Image (cartoon, rainbow, N blue to C red; front, side, top):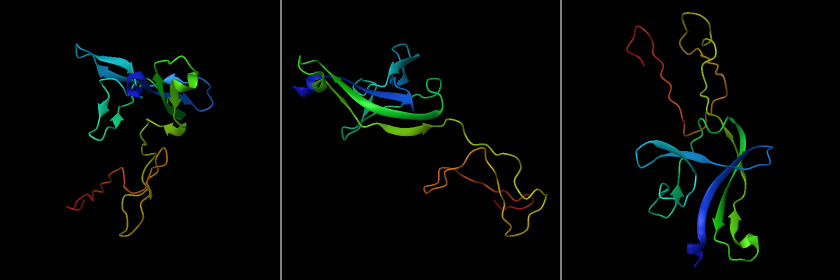
Length: 151
């Protein structure tokens, strides 16, 4: 009986400090193969369910949500039983996080500012924002020594 009552499982977000929650949106292909904007609803046929019963969806952030600090929650909505409204919905705890869609870029030139570097000398590269340097590393670095086969 409880499964028959479940209508929606929606992802909501709001910028830190806002009072109003917005429904997260994503893009899926319609019947004609064109992208269309829909709610992030984990009960729909476009949500992906794993063999373990976990459902996942991609949240389309670009062009929908600007960068900043946000709070998110998931909320269920069920058919109304006619009693207290608390038994017809459930909301998860609120999670906070940062949405940052801008990739870091090299700021200026690598230091030291000269044409040659001594063996064992440290090179410093400054970026436009701090890099996450915890393991597992999420970036690659390639150093090419010109005039040699060293990479």
